[in-house]
Image (cartoon, rainbow, N blue to C red; front, side, top):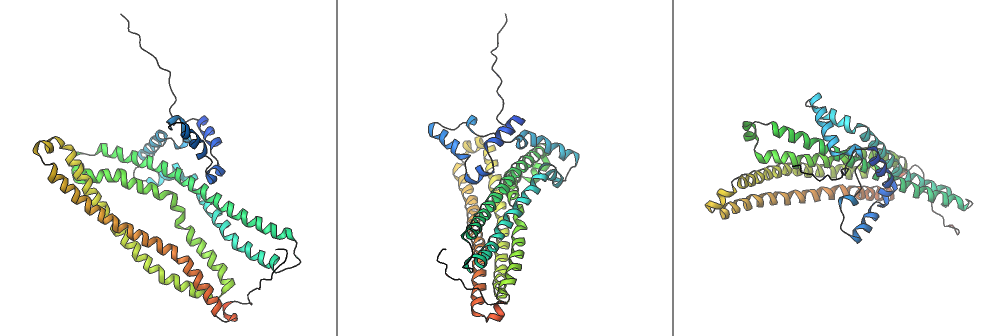
Amino acid sequence: MSVETETRPSRAPLLEPTHRTHHRHRSRIGALSLVFFGWVVPLLRVSWRKQLGEEDLLPLWWRDDVERNARRGADLWEQRRGTFRHIFWQTCGGQFLLGGVYRILSDACSLGQPLLLRSFLSDFVQDPSAPWWLGAAYGAALVACSFFAALFDVAGHFIGSRQAVRTETILKTLMFNKALRLSAASRGAFGVGDVLTRMSVDVQRVSDLIPWLHYSYSPFLMLGVALSMLVTQVRLALVFGLAVVLVMMPLAAVVIAKSYALEEVLMKRRDERTKLMSEILRAAKGVKASGLDAPLGARVQAVRGKELTTLRHTQYLNALQGFFWSAIPPLLSTAVFASYILLPPHLACGSPPPRLRHRPNT
């Protein structure tokens, strides 16, 4: 007696690593679509008619496929054990360099705007005989600088987000493989909470850091170029601006150090809470049979309260840190321009400041 089995048509997975998926992805999402969020419009139209499903979402690029990056990361780790830098360079090296180029181009466009504005004031505003098309050209150049600065910034951040996806996939795969190979003694030494924290929280923190790696040198590069440009314009007035920065930087450093110390305490609190919850869930039947719900729940709430208190203090320090970084640029500008006005002309600038004349056709 033969039993007939029903055969279903095979369906291609959503993250199928094929070049066809790559071309479809590239044709539906571009740099302009990322800047103006054009890729969201089709999803909004579909969501207006029905609930979004997997078939409605845009597929990942085949190079960002989860299974592909997990296998590649595991193979590279077996080849050169203990060198995650080598794995990152092999999987994201080219994209990392391209993101750095985009970051530098975005900063260059941002620094070019004040130069164009200065040329606009000297060549068009102060010259009554300048043609009208010269002012229009300067205006178009300023708009183009702003547009390309935003374009390169979004493109670089998008590349960084792709690198974060690959890094998170590889790290979680390596941590999971390592957890499966741990002995009972090793698991007892580390603790379940510590292992879970490393696999979830620590990996997520590393992946969140990847898109912002180029910002570790970009602000200093822009600050150096901006200061060199200000020296030629305001001379001694720049010293007062630097004094404000030198006063604010130690305060910001103290806040950052306190924030890092609280982050470590928060990780310990989170590990303690995760370990306690894991032990309670493993012995859930015994807890229910013994009637220990109330005391164990109070213990969990106490540990959670300590974690939330530390988290609250950490968020306060992060807000204060953001205040320092946001307040330094306007304070620098205020100090420079106030000293530029109050100082004598021969100290503030090599030549008298240009006068803006009114143009009837402006």
